[in-house]
Image (cartoon, rainbow, N blue to C red; front, side, top):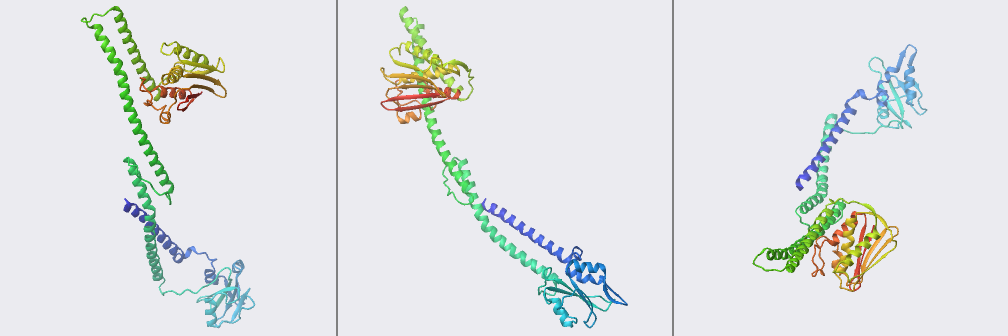
Length: 459
């Protein structure tokens, strides 16, 4: 994989080199071999072609109007010389320009810049038709000359230069491509390896968060840590779920055994039982069946709430009146008629849009939880207030909840360490939380061992 990525990077580098070389060759061809693209205003070309604007007649030498305009436009001047180098005609020449040029002077003035102060000179001939030469001077700010020595064959020079440039470019790009390819691809390999580990549930990576890919490494480290935590939580939840299933199975099996035993007695003709015993056994069967029905209903409700599959029928109602009825029903139950429950409403009428059946189950679960897990004599106080939001508080002065149970109180499948004497699904608190959240509210719990527990609902 590493070699493949490096080769891909080098391939891009080589293609870049070839593109540079092609552009260079194209540029050289354009400027050196395409004459018709160079305008006649270019000083060397203008000097070569200016003979077209020099007129010779019986009166002597003159420059055409078009030629004069070209000279003026280029801020140039001209001297026309005879075959001996003497001046025949001049137009705009500077004061220090000579009137006579020897062959050596002509070569010198033509080769070097600024031979006449501030001007670069170009020398050309009229050709075979006429017998004169001419010198044109252009401002050195427009054009200058520099000596450049090269082989006699321009083509050979160009080919040699291209070859050398190509070879150097290839070498440099290959070396730099290899260095930067390694630098860029090595972290990519670590990233690919890390993703591969994560796909195999191997949460063992811990990258140093630096370099170009520092943010990527940071994200991978964070993802790894989150997945580690999630795996531990999944394992805990799975263990709780298995324990919960075992407890539910036991809770269902125990009443079922009683129902089965009493039913066998009732249908067996070998047993002689009185009418009183028939009523007693029948009541036991009915109570156990009702318990199982409640347990199954709680399981069904929990699943629907968890999957958002339960239709919530909200209607405006009086929460104060609902809570009062719940408390009265609990105190009328024979098992709780001697328990201490105090209700302190702020107002006799606190209205809210809620599903009465779900809210009844939620409040009942919380109050029963306070009664079941505390001894007789424990005071349970229920408050309801309407300020910015509706606040319901159910607090007791019982034995409290330890820190571990407090963290997991609303977890699905969790049954606290102090529930051995109480049978049930272990879903009561989870259902209460889901009902509150389904009504757009929040639920909080505070507890201290030996002092009691407070559960607060905000709606």
